[in-house]
Image (cartoon, rainbow, N blue to C red; front, top):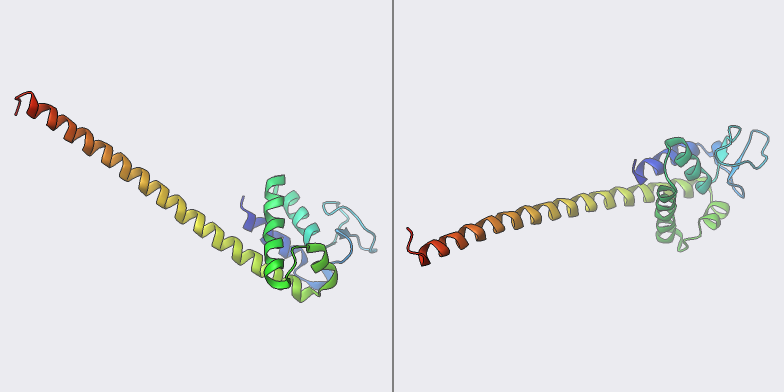
Length: 150
């Protein structure tokens, strides 16, 4: 599972304004505060939605922190603060849409960059292996020529 999966699932939880909340991680039908992964939760803040998404997808704490950090980075770019609670509680639902869109785009770019770096690393390792074979062959030829063998 990837960070982008968590962010995407979290956004689907709060995509409709009536499923989003402020000043609480999650709320039930009556508006009472509940844990984000409580069965009665039906509205979430940005962080609560990420917590619920991680629980739904069986993710780890590391994945939770990565997704929240990605949202913090997006908040910094858009709202000049990494404080998600401030953004969630003082902005409107459209701001949440922009926040998640930016975080998802940044996450996708990071995945592409990582894949490219992995491909480059693999290519370097392949070239190193080829060089080792060539050097071994050259070393064998040099030994043969000094020993008088053709």
